[in-house]
Image (cartoon, rainbow, N blue to C red):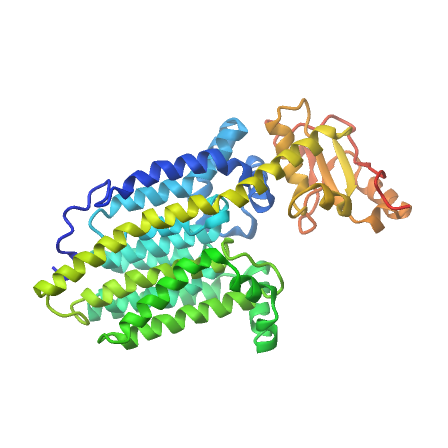
Length: 480
């Protein structure tokens, strides 16, 4: 057995540093604070579709692994909060379960990084496609570190989950290849990587890329110039993103130490791949949609930064790049393990501190949604988006779903929903007359990228619109 896996018999279900106690604490945080995040933008849109027995948007089939409990409960007609909590807790439970599944792995602490590096978006990552992709990636690392006999099946399967959850999973692919080459014996590594490559090519050739992913690829392809990168919002944001400091500092520290080691070139390749992923993320989000802890591209970069410690540990203790254990090296190895065991507690503390700002943000937004919904005089209203932006914290594109869900959670006698339009449309009598004739009382208006839905298609167990409830235009608070 490789040296890497000796002296780890003390790793039990509770962990050598009792870090297992962090999981129930984390689940309690998710249970209490998650619903506030689930009533906001993408999460609210997803919840609305699940309650109405509709397919997931973008049809990323791997995400069924996350939403199936909510889909089942929705078919049974369970209370909306039950459905929401099942979606909210599914991925955290998958993380805890995988952590328990690998009690002897030296890298299972990465699941804590996955949980806590989400920062302010930790609960949104409860559904996020990149959250599932990250779970599959870290699970693949566990399979490699344990040298499982069925890795030639497990790794391609996990790769399929990664690539069919979110396009940002391609960021993980080079790093998974590096770990495979280091921790898996030569011929098996070649066969496994070949199978993964073939599966990736088949997906790229035969599975149609949806419009969202195509847009990301086009933006990445058309924005490769230094001026765009250095002057983008995302570039300046990442310079001041305090929470990115931990994974970034970890990478720099490991790189500096590895310069004097036999595996300096392997770690140099890791470091270059990390900064390539960071630059790609900045380019993709150079249009202004950038938050270091959001669910798409910057979250994987944070994960890869903290992964540098696992990569360094794997290199220093592998049969190929490491050396035999001397007494002094054994002492240093145990010291390294103590540092690794401390990491979950450290990033958990940073996570709890980092929650203070977004906690108030989402709580205030939920209160604002409830106030707006309660003040509505009609079941369906059209209000000026410019006015709504002054009354709400954050984006307003999903307000038709947010207000419908809020009225259901408030147990109002009927469902209330707001469709946001700009001033120019509302003030144009011809456009509004045409819209009223076209809509009538039989349609539900959602986001601009989605066609109107028939009221009959809306699940009456959760959403009820009285007959003849047409959209009423609210002209108050409009400019003269």
